Length: 243
Ligand code: ASP
Ligand code: MG
Image (cartoon, rainbow, N blue to C red; front, side, top):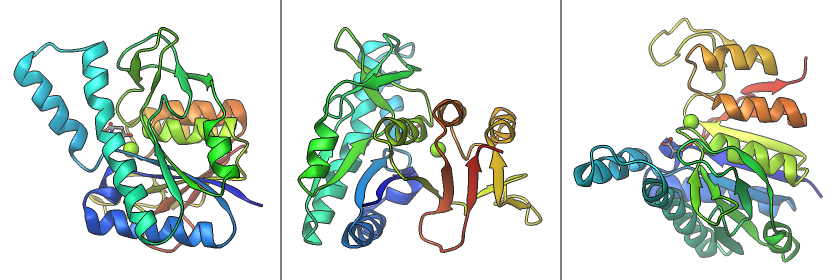
């Protein structure tokens, strides 16, 4: 049996129609007999909207309460997607970061993932369910909700792929791979078929927003091969792997 981690970003789950399209893609993977863990971001613009609400209350907000608020965006996405899957007659369960056992450092706003502290995901997979995990969040050793920094759902996906020993880790986005410049702004941008971890890190640090740089560090450390692909197009995308 193949174990697949799929991650969908905010623009891919932005409304009900897109969530259903994601649910159908996940359903197809499940029907093919594979174990599926899907990590979702907050619906497009959702994290910024939560941030704006917090800043109305306190322009300098940060720390524990801000993390507790921001983590709700991803929780909405996974529960909505679980409902869509259930309507498609696919057994599915949504989990927040802490339900999934994602333990992080005791840091707010940019925590690193340390380990999986329980076997809930394994148990849900063994029961034949698709597992939807809220990205971008975890639980600190003290028991507080933490977030991983903007774009952090990519890191959730790669960390889960490493800890669950997944066969594949796919990051779906609104572009069909990694380009040398922004393909939405420069039509002559060139897509890479394959990049090493270090090449991808250089691109991520120089401002390519397609992958969170910490997810690439994590992938390098654990040898997770990442497939960056378009959410709804076909095409091969970009593989980020050891050279
Ligand atoms: N929702 C968070 C953000 O907007 C995390 C993510 O999408 O990866 O940064
Ligand atoms: Mg992103």
